[in-house]
Picture (cartoon, one colour):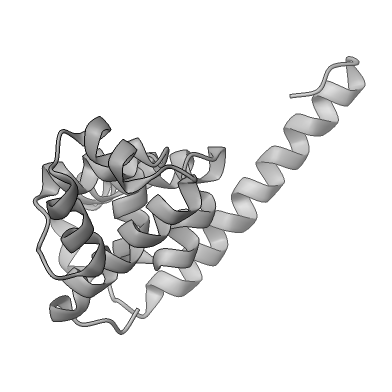
Length: 150
């Protein structure tokens, strides 16, 4: 994603504003749930006041979006994906994968870690997706064979 780090505060403000609006809760209710002053929340949602990490997570949680997961997806993919997938099984899977994959890759590659090439990331992602699809299809076939559904 070609988004500059300096754009992050504006992206966070847009994400928070949308999350609160789509939650159907009033700003007063979100402020009460987060322990923020209503004016501070209003200015944060408008992008006129930077939010702390704790405030960001609290606002997302109050708006019924998984805070850490939504923030991670915002940073890596974008606000539409982050809000659209927040709280879903795929989002939880991606969050867990992205927490564990770097450690596993470094451990598995050991001294060969410097051999990784950024251009391999797209193909690796496609390979992983195909492997997951095959794994899920196999699990479904097995559960159908014994009369259950995973």
